[in-house]
Image (cartoon, rainbow, N blue to C red; front, side):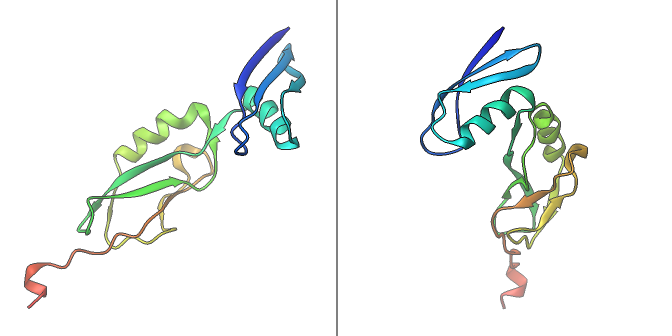
Length: 128
């Protein structure tokens, strides 16, 4: 029998969970104070996922980078591949919140989306 302990991140309470497993099957989840904790504990030991947040380069923008995130959670094992793919990405300004920056990142079925606006930089010659 295997026991794994961790902190639930589904709500602000941060319950200390203990998940008991046998042969890859969850037998029980203890320590949760809400039903979401039980679901989180089961998922965390069988198929852990995360939301990825980072930034990508912006060409011709008022900022050199734009913050981005996965539109939904991706398998934890794909995070390094996702970050490597995003390191190669550069977008042209303007960028708007919600713009899809990269579709189906690393074949996860999840898009990378912008989480802030970056306006196009106005050149000195256009200001006159």
